[in-house]
Image (cartoon, rainbow, N blue to C red):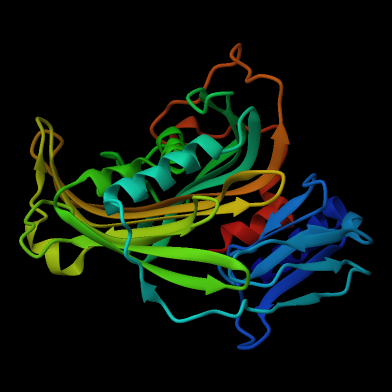
Length: 375
């Protein structure tokens, strides 16, 4: 009874602080299924929201009267004006599509793919600031036992080599006693954003002789898209071989999304990594990213990494410690800037959790951000 009373009080407090909220559900008009990770934005891109895994978007009531647009390659471009605070079901029509057909290039395929990847990196919006919601989840027995979340800005300079990040607000929550970590997060915020901006993973896979790749065409609406499937060669016995795909626009030479995980058939080769202090046995690692390709800008809107590692260390008296977790971000704002703020100290720590509580406002009560934290 006491818990329910506290929840009611919290709900009233949230409504008082943030006002009433507009709930938008993105749905496939043909299947009625929710559409995750689709970004909607105003005409000037001054405001933007991305749907969570359940196709949900929550925005403040101040957006009543605003018109939002979508430009996702899988769906017909659409616009929706928010008329009032009533829930909105925004149905997106899938683009007409052709069956996948293999593509044969006159040039070496590796050369074609690297050209697309390099052009995507060069086209990435420069002199920009991405406002993001960033979160780390630490998982035990299928449940989150500790997490960190924050509002983080990523700055990109004029040459896409100057990448800087700044934590504006953050908090760390230990639901249960958290054990000493051995790299509880194996990818830090700085590495993650550089990976999606500079396409390190894709370049590594294309340049690795242990992989083979094939490209198929698919026409979606007016866009001539390509799907590049990457998998290990039959004879490959290297550790941590991946399997997945990336989608790119043939005409624009832009990567639109990618997704990779360990190849199930090759996991038998995933021998532990031995370093001085510990032995790391990687069980799985999944990586995905999605990009917005709009008239005004090209940049990542979402990225997610899930990892699962077994750690043993005689030195630290750790036996079969399971490091299982997730790190992800959603872009919640985009701005052009004159220069990146070199005078401020970039956040370069391994985990956001290590920063602890560093906030001046209870940002986590914002319903828009709570919508992301539910996944």
